[in-house]
Length: 387
Image (cartoon, rainbow, N blue to C red; front, side, top):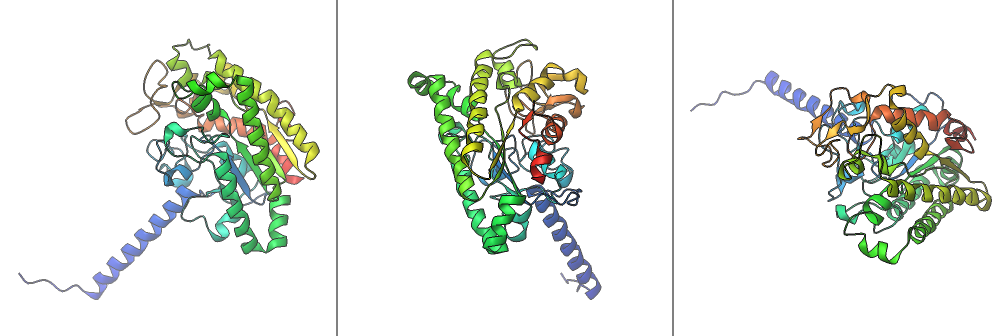
């Protein structure tokens, strides 16, 4: 059969189509991995936002790990405008607290996941996200997920970034940019209880050999070392969140068959024990490390306020997950393509069995940015940026 020769015009049309398609695909990858804020550095005061932690602030690092802890499937990210509603690896329907804080403080871009292929060159200057779903302070935490980045590994990765900044800016400018203009945000500790000390079967040995006090001592000693390592790498402005009311999340309420107004007492008791001593640790570091400012974020009380008085903030429920399956509160199976999905996503405090919705994240982030010393001390984040 004879084949019709293509015309130059048609070849050009195909070439233009392919070029346009590649540009669109590239833009989507950029948005999913990094995100672009409409806040074009309006305040001009924030250098880089360096984010460490767990799935509460993971922006996609776990996408690049062989792990059971992933959120790179729909409907996660359904309200994340930067990716057009496509999943990016964030464990929520939209922005994390870290994303929102960065926007409000004037960052032009979301902190890019360290493991993302485009985490190179000038893209690093807006900040880097090292957080990983399932990660914890202790190296053993989250082993049920097979792979995750613990806090020790995250600090190791920052050491790599620190060298890259020297190459990008020169040693003197890099040191000033990191120590005077950048903020280090740490949101970690919940998994050390949920997926370590309190986890059925895996935690039996630990709980037989370590009392809660000994385990929390171990956590805080590790965290002290990790924060000190960051300080030695020129970090100076820190914000550290305490552990939220983990006994009140839909997962815990579902597996323990609790009523809507009940929470798991042991989990919250452990969180409070840790939180009291975390605050003392940060006060001690403020005294011992010259030039550093360690800010304590009272996430526990902020989230508990939303759970207790959810109607006051316009929510319909603080018990049931918007996206999930299993049990009375859809709190057993994580959010995925086969999950039940609520219609009014901004009316749910919890997006899935473990994580807040974007609507809840916005309220929490605004308190951290502009709240008083009851929720964030000794200064809020807007003041920390300008110090």
